[in-house]
Length: 66
Image 1 (cartoon, one colour):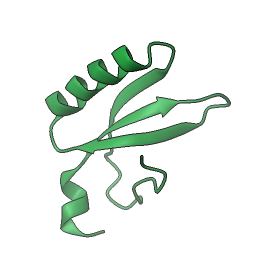
Image 2 (cartoon, rainbow, N blue to C red):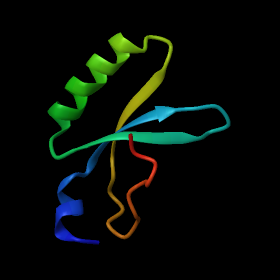
Image 3 (cartoon, rainbow, N blue to C red):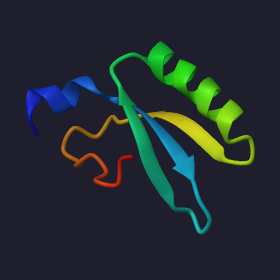
Image 4 (cartoon, rainbow, N blue to C red):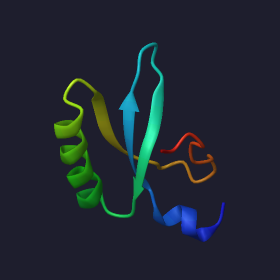
C-alpha cells in the first residue's frame, strides 16, 4: 500500500441492508470526516452513515468509492 493511502485513514461509510457498507469518502482528519458526515446526513436524511477509522494497514481501501 503506498504511503499516500496510509494518510487517508478516516472513512465515511454508508450502511446498507444485509450488513453491507459502501465507502463514500476518505479523510486524513477525523474532524473533516465528521463535517462531511453532518453535511451528507442533511442531504440524505434517510441514509445511515458512519465515520470509521481504517486501522488495518494491510487491507485494501474499498474500490467502490463515489
